[in-house]
Image (cartoon, rainbow, N blue to C red; front, side, top):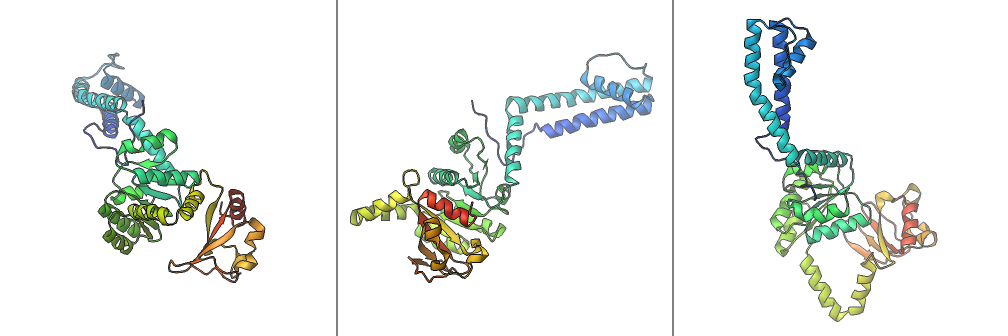
Length: 346
């Protein structure tokens, strides 16, 4: 049976284990200090008497108590009945309900997230979120999932016990901070509600202005709002799906080929992006013909992303990569591995 998984903030209850431990230590401390003051016990004697009084084990006294000592110990017994009852109830609740294990799991996940940099935060683990995470896992790209519904993330955890996830509302700033947004490289929000996606984009851009943000949208009118809010890209799955199906009628061969080369599980063709800031110093300012990528790695440059987001298809041999730009290359897995090693992309 799988344990119930932790939330980013454990639910506050009347039975607080931390408070119970504080009360226990305070009771022992007061008892020890009181016996040392009233009966002039040594520290060890007073501590021992305080512990056996609170635990009600019934051992004999270290030394006979004075009248004042008996009154003090009687008061300790009465007060500590409530303290011990609260401690036992809190401990039992945390053990029986699995809260101790949840807390340990939560702390383990938060410890790993705190060490991450350049990772991707995925908001929403529905049908789109699961596909996004599958792709990130395939490329061994670090990620953190934020999802309110624990049941949705169950299959991911069953597949990958090291998966990092947070159960909370992604529209809350503290949830994004728990996912390490200030150190993240990208955020993908794939929630069903456009207003929630918009709120997340606004919050994420405010918390990390350099963050690359990709958002899902259902309505066309939401697209412009999301772009203005700070989204780098806005994807409309229904629009893309409709275009894809219509193009299968007019240009079936072209679409089938594109489908083949983008299916990483069956095709031997892949893509990679080389940004200007990833160029080694010896390649800066060099045109494509002098970079010798074809002869050195076997890959071909099929696209040039210009500053401002425009693209040039099949750039000429004299094209030079400028700041804020990037080259899109295509090749088989072996060629792409050589390309990544050449530019230290892995």
